[in-house]
Image (cartoon, rainbow, N blue to C red; front, side, top):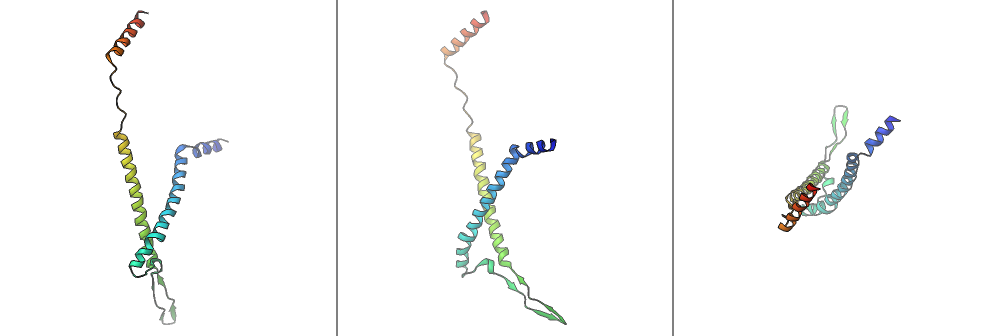
Amino acid sequence: MGMVKEFKEFALRGNVMDLAVGVIMGASFGKIVNSLVSDILTPPLGYILGGVNFTELDYKFPEKTIGDIVLKPATLSYGKFLQATFDFIIVAACVFAMVKVMNNLQRRMKEQKPATPAEPPADVKLLGEIRDLLKSRG
């Protein structure tokens, strides 16, 4: 039973739960960024470049015969690589922007430290001193 108890403590620890939430949110954010790239940014870019669909860009090596050996044609799909590179750049830019915003918010929160309480008025100080004198005589 000790191992089950240890696992339960581990699984319910705050850091593990935070990590789980981060992974789930990251996966959802990845879908949003993926849609942003493939559905919003890439089509106009392909249109500007003359109707190019990046994922369809490739180079097909011709079939070649060397003696009795026939080399089947191979395809170099560099368009998929370009698309993955665009995806990475956009995700990196989004993460950078989020980190920058979070750093700015943290900096502002540190700057807005609670103000020190104002000095009490003279009559309140005097009443406090009287109270302390009465306690000491008590």
